[in-house]
Length: 417
Picture 1 (cartoon, rainbow, N blue to C red):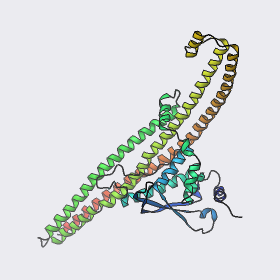
Picture 2 (cartoon, rainbow, N blue to C red):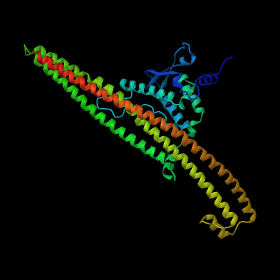
Picture 3 (cartoon, helix red, strand yellow):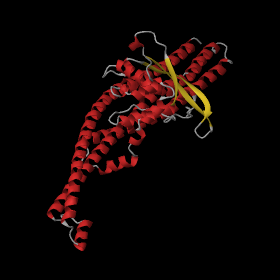
Picture 4 (spheres, one colour):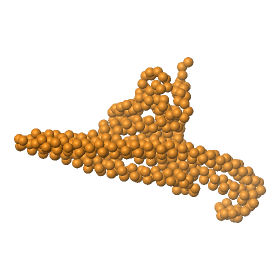
């Protein structure tokens, strides 16, 4: 029997046990980047970059399967992440690497087609896929699996989900932020933490960019030592060899700064990931505000309907209303009219009570799921940033030791003169 794509997809996903991340069953990598030229949606020629995704399900198949590979553009990664944000609003969805370079020191190219930048983005896109594939919930999503295994058909499938219609408008979310009456203290504090985290990482990246500029200048100045020592060696007989050797050490030291700062960019990208993670965290908190606001609006509407029913039944108007003024000016409603309105209000109240019940359940479920994922994220963040900062400190120590070694070598050259 021939299986269609859906049947095959379901079978493969069933091989991944419930609660087990896809990463434990599939090897995923973004192996390379390639520059291409083609026509865009408005028939204009454009240059863009595509990324080669390679996957292997060898852990599941327990054989030697053929490596699957396909090409994706950055915009397709964006589409996948937007889908995940809407479909899993309670999850701290891993961020994508920056589309254009930010917090760069002056000698680093900000061109998004620069080979070094494209390579760093390739690493960042691979990291994004690994983050999603190791997530306890996101990793089992069918669209994510299709993204990894289908080159062309997956976009039609993601649009068929109707996720774009479910996306909350920015205006609606902003309205909820300012009008929610009983915000959850935990989410309010977490949103504030996201703001603070983004602020301190931004400051740290700016400091690092300024330090990189200074460091580049210091290293390149050592190249002047090399030039002067070499020129000096030409006019000395006894001291010439020693001066020339010292000059070579200085030239090598000056040239080494490019590799050092390239390695520093690797650590800067790790910090940038959590700069963008901070926004993902705040997105979850804003979604909770919206959920809470919709619950409060449902409760308010139900309370209003019940008050209308009571006023209609007793004939007393508690608050000023246009309806009350109309009754005074044009007379009271007939019993038949009042009975019809009471019946309509009873139906609306029943519907309102059901809606409040549903909103309460949605809010409770959101809080439960979101807080589990926030705790998971916090543990991941603490581990990653600690390891990154330790590695950065070790790199700085190693760099300083190399500088000391260069001057020790120069000292030996001077001793031999």
